[in-house]
Structures are given as structure tokens and as C-alpha cells.
Image 1 (cartoon, helix red, strand yellow):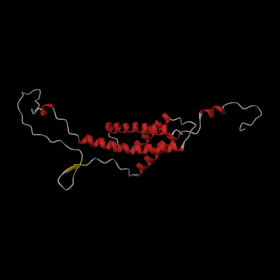
Image 2 (cartoon, one colour):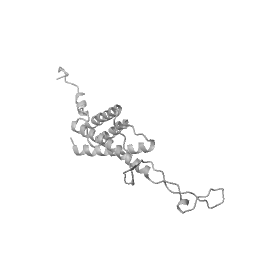
Image 3 (tube, one colour):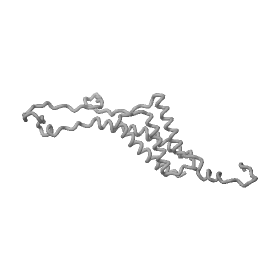
Image 4 (spheres, one colour):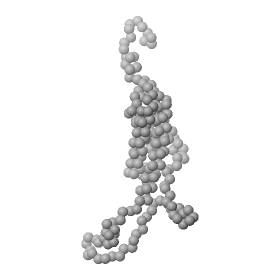
Length: 190
């Protein structure tokens, strides 16, 4: 069954899937649960890259791939939420002229000293007060899986990962052996 290679392939596939989740969220802002299906496909392909699955169907390998895909997907969204929260809480860059204490002059106007009020940095995260006056930053929670469609997408992703990791029961050698002509006078099923 090659459990070690299966585990390594599933972990590699899940890591690639998490990287793609980060890229998709950063580029397009998508956070839909149907993204679990491509994630499961990538995890299954990771297993298939390291293990010969044709002719060696394994229920344990399929279950391992399914568990790695679902755990990786859910854990990946926690990572995406942490990255998004850290990025939203990061201070905005200060222009170079303001950092030196001088306001930036417009290209067409003469340089004059203009007093600018210091601008406050906006925070994207919610701030909660713990009752002692100290403000704490709350991280943005990942999307909760609660609707029926979310569960359906997760079930489809689990089935895709299972089938990709399990492999097929037929091999190419069995197909080649049946292609040989039978001797004359024998029944084809014999």
C-alpha cells in the first residue's frame, strides 16, 4: 500500500492546495466552499504522483487522502484568515516626505511649509474592550461551515479525494492479457 509515500504525497498536495487558496483569496477575494473540490483534486494528484495507484486500489489510501484533503482545506482557511487579518492590521506605509517631518510639495507649486495634521492609521479589524480599558485586536474568524450547500460541497470534495487517492482496481496488464486470441475450440470465458 505504500503508506509513507501516500502520506507524503497527500501532505505535498495539501500544501500546494493551501498555497493556491492563499493566491485565490489574495487575487480575487473568493472564499467559497466549492473551492474544496479543486483542493481535494490537488491533494489526490499529490498522492498519485508518489504512489502507483493503477491496479492497486486501496481503501486505506483513499481514506487517508480524504482525511488529509478535508483537514488541509479547513486548516488552510484558518491560515488564510490569519494572513488576511495580519495584512489588514499592518500599518499603512508613511510617505518619505512625511517621515522626514516635511510635507510633500506638489510639482507645480513653490515649496512652502504647510502644516499637516497627523493622520491616524485605519484599522480593519474589530477592537474589543476587555473591561480594563486596554483594547485588544480580535482576529477575523474564518467562514463557518453551516449551510447545506457548504456540507454538500465538502462531501463532494471528500468523495473526489477518496477516489483520487484510492486508485483503480484494473491495471493495464490485465487489459493486455485479455487481448490475446484464444486457441480454437475453447470457450472465450474459459
